Image (cartoon, rainbow, N blue to C red; front, side, top):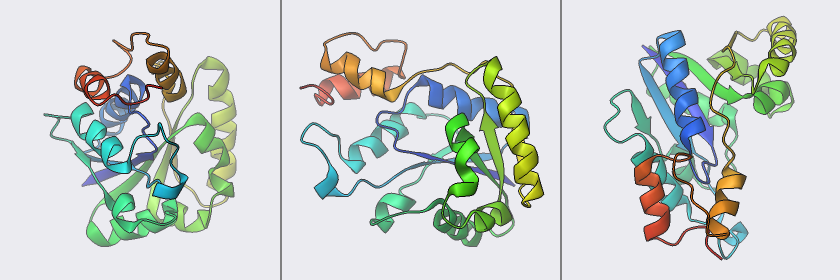
Length: 199
């Protein structure tokens, strides 16, 4: 089975994240995508920040009814600092017969060889990157060649994915502006009902 890991802070998860995950499902024929929010240490959370559990719930709401997508609390349960290589090692044990993929945005793809133990990441998963726009794709393809020389297997998705910023969504909520169309409707309802990101 082709299983992908899609990690991030998801603070909040938005339509760009959802579009990206679905585009990789379609392009690569993925059979399972694990949405994995990172753990936030409670002492590092700002007064207005949401909890790890709330980010986890927003991820669940974003993919409600989508059979191929599973939201995992593997990094939240681990607590402490979670490195991608650690999560991939754990996923390899959980799904020993699966081919693993790691979904990343452009910035993450361009710096992945600087992450903790990149060689372990490369040994466990195909690294999937997506450019923000046409300008990025040549940079990503060049980086993919360098990563291949380091032993990585890579996949680059053509641009065209909806670009949304979690920072912009948080700002809009804080300023009382609408986020309709930027996040899934159930996520928007959850943010409003729980007063998230509001000053």
